[in-house]
Image (cartoon, rainbow, N blue to C red):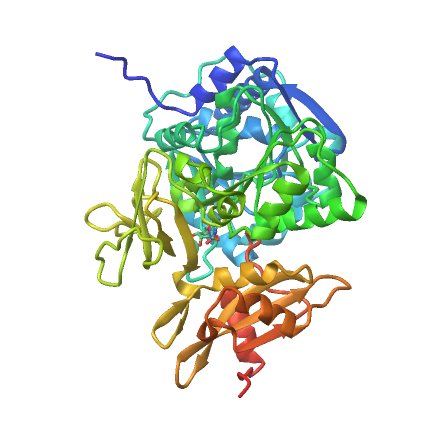
Length: 537
Ligand code: ADP
């Protein structure tokens, strides 16, 4: 019989510290400047933090809210909090105050750990989160902010603590982290990751057909650690013994470019970040000197972005789909032999799909009656999943989030092909149903985005007497390059049947976004309603 090796996340950082101790872990700090560390240093500080938290009375299962940018210090917090037996509740600074209050109280956070510049968020809501006992500011004494709140200084807490005490022992099924879905409809829902689900997910995501990180990589997560389990990157990089570069809070294209040029080979973020980056590279006539692969997900990646990255900059795009409830990886678009054999243009079309799942993620598409649909590249249905790192039930929910066979409904609509590649066509709550037929809003948007004058696009349904709904395309024009309506239509005509074309194209200055940076179609539809928008005759 084999050993019953407990799949705790502490085993990941211990592995990195033992076998890749000197691998650089560097990043832009909140105090300013770039700090240099390595996996041994990150692990030691995590141990010190675990000891400090226990000294402050943190017990197994207690929840700590963490609101911090992607910094080197945040990595020690990432491992120090669960290392103390506590649960790391990631907090997104872009949430509305009411949502933040709700999730802090709902998860019963005891402590808050926060970057100094984000402290005002808590000063404003402190009366509404009465159970918070301590606020730890993630900086040193010299940089502690002035505040009416009673604060603890992180650096002082960890200083002098032992660097070699054992981690808090526990079961691999203990809670490790909590991330709330942004709750565009209804209240945010808490997804609780276990140590085991995080380790299994990281192992599955590491596979060569997935993110494929090795000790020769230098990894920069632009996606914040507070988005959907940080896309697991803070587990994957140390597991592989890769170097890490943490970009800090500067999410501007020049700021990120500067950090990418510190030898980064692999990076990850939502499409909006990369749209901005490509514009910047073009305007400044720059190239990447070390970047090899970029993981793009969280929202559909336009074909033009994939093409430019690969053909102009020699950077391979990995288009991915996932969600908070899946820890978050669902699928990644890497090439199976069947796809490798295709001509370039067809391969590019395959990259508009989100690819195929890793081991431990199962998928199927079903119709409205829950019957399985064929993987024929045409049949569209609700995408269901189950797996080792997929939610079973939401925090404190009375009922399971899955059906009696363990399938979780992702809320996405998709098509699958014979090779198991998934094309996401919509979110169920955003679908456009005209005359009983679905029109893919994502495909309309991506097609329009191929026009250089389209900076951002969103297709939404507008009520229609005869067809029940008709699509309208809302476009933010690129600076100094407003496209003609007819140009956009003729682009769309190449790909869509006449009845699928939008009834109207509206130009706006901006689109509403959610806290995770996605277009909020709910709000956009509401805006049109508020403006008493009517379709042209
Ligand atoms: P939310 O956006 O609800 O806060 P998530 O970050 O968990 O929470 O978002 C998951 C959703 O994002 C998926 O269900 C899907 O609708 C969308 N999504 C993620 N990746 C992609 C992609 N590559 N293409 C299209 N949609 C995507």
